[in-house]
Amino acid sequence: MAVVTTEQIESFRTLGAVFLPDLFEQKWVNSIRRAIELDKQNPGPMVRHNTPDGEPGEFFVDFQLWQRWPECRDFVYHSPAAEAMGELMGASRVGFYHDHLLVKEPATEAVTPWHHDQPYYPVDGEMVASIWMPLDPIPQEICVNYIAGSHRWGKRYRPQYFDPAATKLTATDDGFDEQPDFDQMRDELQLLSWALEPGDAIAFHALTVHGAAANLSASRRRRAYATRWFGDDAIYAARPGRVSPPIEGHGLEPGDEMISEMFPEVWRA
Image 1 (cartoon, one colour):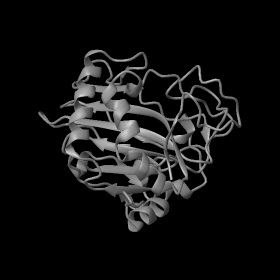
Image 2 (cartoon, rainbow, N blue to C red):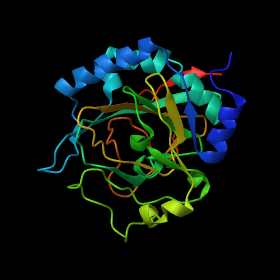
Image 3 (tube, rainbow, N blue to C red):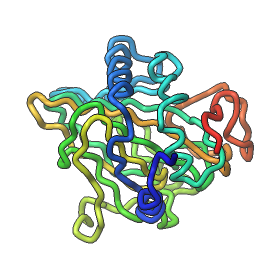
Image 4 (cartoon, rainbow, N blue to C red):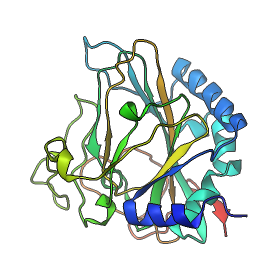
């Protein structure tokens, strides 16, 4: 039985992002919640605190939880996520790239800047995508906004690093397009966002431009667990500047198939 519908597949491929209500049973939500709180107490080596000095709240970011917490590894191998990704991308095999924890605690003024993911990754291919899974109820006003159809623009925008202290790529770097001010263009764009409950998810293409508002609530948390997946055509690629996350030790060379020991196959049609 298919995990996603034909209508959802069509929306993913034409719009670049699709809402997947009730994709995950409560057991998966509870399991990842446990892992998130453990990780906040004992984060990994790639942890980032993206809250500027002096600002309230906390924007906590970490990667590679699946390599440290059995709950996350179980999610990668046994939840419906991999099969959903395979069906949406039209892949015969799905590999797992990495996971990404994003927590905006109450009163966090930090926004998630407009960006798309693939320029951060040393990965080329059409079948590269993510599932964004909330662990708290998400009102539409603080949900991620996705620009419909932006994955088909043929653009590779220069990475927008969330950490304000990060070294940014400059206009002289090869291979990237200059990103326009999407905030100034909001009236011209079709923006996709939804109100979500735990168990719901959003799947989106790695070239779909997206960004998210601050979490100004005095009491509401915004915990989200994003997982990154790729299909048959994904190959390792060289990128100028730094990549995110800075995963090392994979032994891949440009042109190599991404499915490998470090980036395992997790689903096959």
